[in-house]
Image (cartoon, rainbow, N blue to C red; front, top):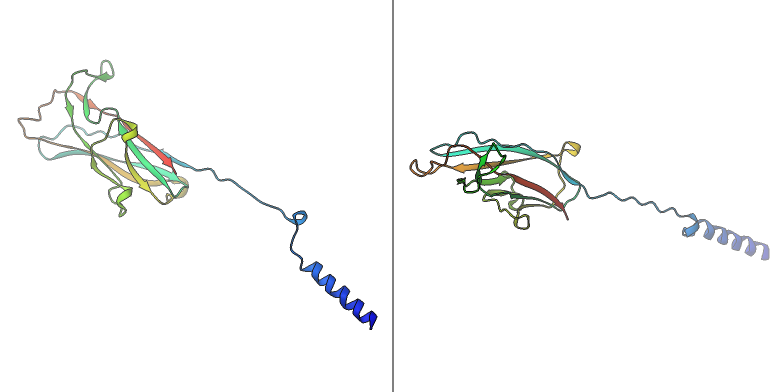
Amino acid sequence: MKKLLCVGLLFLVGLAMVTAEPTDDNEILLSLNVEKKVYIISCQDLNLGAISSVGTTSASGTVFIRSNRASWSFDVYADKGVLAEWDPATSSYFANGDTIPYTFSFNVGSAVTAERIVSQTVPTVSANALKAMFNRKTSNGSSGEAFGYYVEVTAVSGSLDWQTAGDYHDVLHFSLTAY
């Protein structure tokens, strides 16, 4: 009987050793850090051509954005916030030149209101930048997701829209922020 009891105890001890929880000596912890990535792959300059004396003048482009973060924003601000008379000889704006107002739109086809900017005047301070907020990663992998944008100039009556003949410029600054 003692032999049977000893064999039974040895069996139970052996079973306990097989089903025991792993200890620090037999565990391997794996870890990996994936950096936040949100960046512009490419975008296009816009040329509005000649101003229309009736209706609107517009130009559109596409920006390709890649983000592996579900929380990020597209921000835009401008040098002038208007098309300002440009001096090609000095590559600078005329100090007292004429200006032409315009509006900026981004991703207007989105069903999510926070993801779009619709017909807004662009501020000239980065802290006041227009924002489109996203709560999702971009699609299309390394190609990036395409987002449309456009600028629109509305003509005014013929007696009021005779700005000084010449070139008019502004620079839009796009930036992305991951949260």
